[in-house]
Image 1: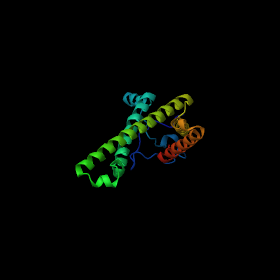
Image 2: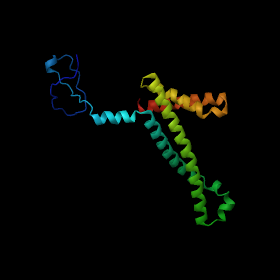
Image 3: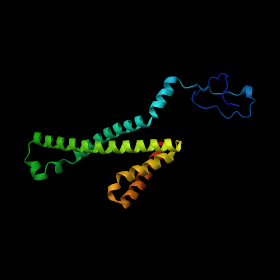
Image 4: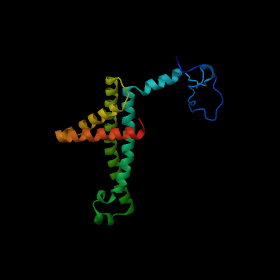
Length: 182
């Protein structure tokens, strides 16, 4: 028998709080929280966001944006090396120094954006495929996807690099899942 009933909910101080343990009360006196069926729009939105292609493209775009921000941060930190050292930096005007810094920052941003976009797309696509194959939505999917992503990204470094990449990305994925409360 279902725990959801058509009994109207009594006014309470917190509408999102579940009812306290009322198992000792007879069924006619228990207060139940009403569950509403999802709308067609909510179902369509959820189906759209659970599509592997959509998740992969979204992760690619967001990863690229994060790479741009990281590149800007790192580019502004590395102004001396981009301008050829301190001696050349002292002989430049402010405008020339700013142009060199902007070029360096743009190059770093583009490089980081490509890397983060590829990593995000690879992870999201792998996780979605693993989730589809296993037919489960749990923390193991992200651990397996992290391992696969790390191994693929480190493949050119040899077997030892593949193992280290797999272990480190899997551990990072598990840490993020635990931090996010999944």
